[in-house]
Image 1 (spheres, rainbow, N blue to C red):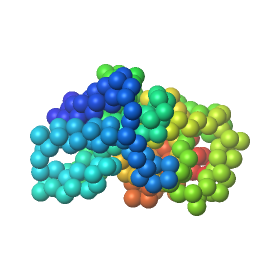
Image 2 (tube, rainbow, N blue to C red; image 1 turned 30 degrees about the vertical axis):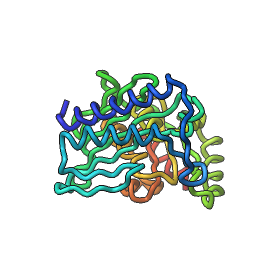
Image 3 (cartoon, one colour; image 1 turned 120 degrees about the vertical axis):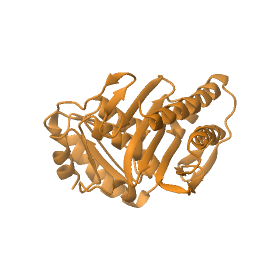
Length: 258
């Protein structure tokens, strides 16, 4: 395992232990609304500080972009860590077991390493550019699904962008009638990991942030899948939208979304 990926794994597991401990203790969560339908708890903040602490101890000069603390520049800005300490906070608040830690590292603007860790199931998804993607120690590959009509497709509701609901409903109708089924679990990073692991054949969502997508996108690419914005372009992190799928399903997915 690459040393930088090893640090990401260490940080993800450290955050996961905080998340699990809080869930097991069952105490009252301090829930604050950042925006409509967008929440943060003391667990998010503690997990993020744990992640940053591990990274800073190893690479104090690297830049960090984290959901709760924002963008922190570094003296070696060609390296940037992109962190979501708890993707699926609303699920976590309600005890719905679909949430994860997501950590990615960019080098000169390209995704280099990624980790998605599901602390509840103790599943670790990892990838390094050019070295493949793994679930724990097992190599991951996207499915061999050839057509959208046979695909199980994941999605997420655009809860931050209510002005795009009508567009989303048109897309949802196209997916419901044109695929084998649609699933919405509420943690984009974990959904993307599921595409890489072959549990979903495709995924799309709008209104996301870089920390929702970065690690999962690299997982899919290293598992043999395709990722882009809703037009198929490479600027999905900047545009805040993502489409992903097997090589054969991906173009059909884009066509249906149009």
